Length: 458
Image 1 (cartoon, one colour):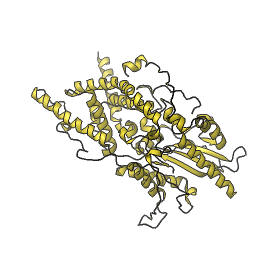
Image 2 (cartoon, one colour):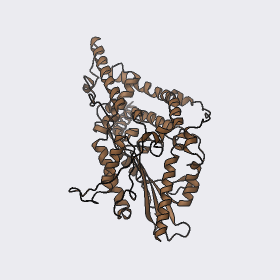
Image 3 (spheres, rainbow, N blue to C red):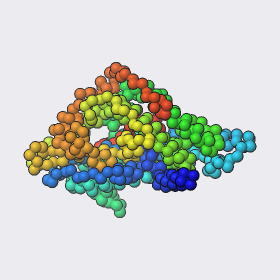
């Protein structure tokens, strides 16, 4: 009996220690701040430098998400409804003479921190800093590319017309070009940020212009909600038992949304986030990752096929850079991948790493004159970390011609009009596994885009 008790105490102690080291800010899917995501990438793997001696970067093409922002109008309305419903639950418990002893004090009379705001979704100071500092790091990392006098044709910065995206582009440009001018103590300089009309911006807001994608998303959203329901129901039941209030599934979903906003925007982790155990947070994060995977990731090929205009633009700019320099002297199969496995199994697809605030991809073109096989190489960086390319034998440093042939060409067999306007055949739907039924993817170029529509509420 003593041995069993001792084991039980050791187990509880181990769990407490694990919980104490748990940081909910690392589990917020696409609401994750960039510094947190970057730190997660740095601690998970140390990338080796595979760039051969004698190679120098001659061109960088950056595509980045906007920085950390406040909740949008849709989220703010949900939080106001939550405040009203929480008040009803408290009054109902009091009328029935139920004990409120287990109810956290902050929940009683809680109001949304964003109540009364008429607009939302704007870039906050933390988001400005993310892009400003990213600009500085890129200038320092590729310093030889920024010796030339500024000209908008040499250093084009493009943004969508979404305010948080254009503001992110400005913050990025301020960092990139700081100390390059004579404005103020920081020696800033004026620079251009250009954008296209949203209705025709198929390079940076292709998802808003793609009719077939919008139809696909509308069809899939109910099925995705159905996938998430068992997780929300399980956690709702636990919350009701834990705090003695009659929470609904919608309450749980909105409390999780509040947790993400508080942790990311306000740096508060002991209120809404404190309602959930670490294992519940892991499940809620997984549910978010499922939604991102199906509607914006590798769950369907249209999610990335519609980005062909951006891919073409990137390759074209590289070819132009090669031409200018010389003048001076996935995967082939496009079948949906398996859904991310449920915790505690590990998974590669995590929204907090794939698409945090200010998340970015860079394609760096290197000139390697001493290399006899290829004079130009492409390196791909995700959130500033080198990424191995399957099409280039797992290397993150790929000969340009091989990059075009094995990575780019399979996608260019599709064009934007055929992907987004032609009638597509419905893929055969695989039945959900029993496990799944039971339990259950701004911008700058030096280009800019928001990875989602404003009305999505992410």
